[in-house]
View 1: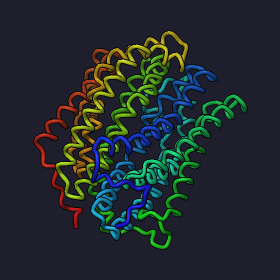
View 2: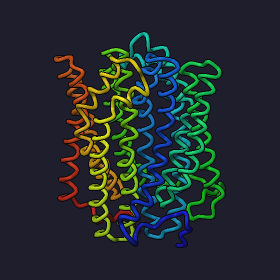
View 3: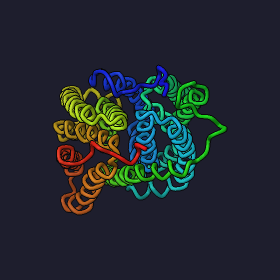
Length: 451
């Protein structure tokens, strides 16, 4: 099969260079992706105050509750596309691409409808303070109205990354992220809009990035080109997507539900806690990007190499990528401890909010290595076609255990420190589980997508 230059076959050459070259554009793309909500938070916090900041930063877990559900199926598609690309099966690759794109569109429509309809109910179930509730509801409704653009963009990005093209999604994302910042300033400072201006800026930018990605897929001469004439669901491919995607979808949705419960417990402590801890979560979003980018690279690397029956190379890549992710996370933790207070003040100047943020950093920074290891090993297992393994790790520890602590222990002690401690406890246990499976489990010899 002819592999054009924007697609990257990761089954030969230096492992370190392959992972680095593929993950760097993803990292840059993730940085600009994070700029969407971070720009909202920075501009809202500085121009509209801490209450509006609390409204914007507290709804992230709700957004990913729905997006994560359908994103899991996109992850399943990515594994399949990468496997067919690595094995050189062009006919199956074309069918997988068409099915993947259509599934992204359907997912986006469902996210939009469900998100807009359920926003008021979800806001109330999250124990949102009365002085924050109205703004949170407005922001969330408008954000979900752009669900189609977000789902289509993520679907297109996942497709390109599965065949090793991480550059084009980056170009489009840089443009749309900068556009988002300009719109934020224009709507909030120029037009005097509230949080609705921040949400509107975000969804417009999301649709721009989706349009640019679709244009690329419809006009490229690459093997993964999307053709309207053959754009239809393939039953066999759809079954594989659900086989590999359902555990990831459930994992994402259930984990997001647990995080929504966690946010609800934070909301009980008021808007200062919401603002301070929300600001740290935005900062951590940037800090963890190198490790999540490596995780994406490891999924593609593993899937392509196992598709080409190079299990030893896949194993070496898993070890190198995981150790690299841990080293990066340790460095990030040091930065957070040394400069966390100054970074939080970029979002809010309220001393009480800053104090809450620093409390979170002191509790979790020493455990970022476990978060990095979990993401890296989860990427390896996704690429190996072992979604049940990652589902057990995330649902068992990031969901069930978190819900137990939040539902049973937190009401007894009513301690925000215990709420925050949920993160390092569950990160550490999920890492231990995945490390044991990586050494003991049978993930290097997949069979069901080689034909």
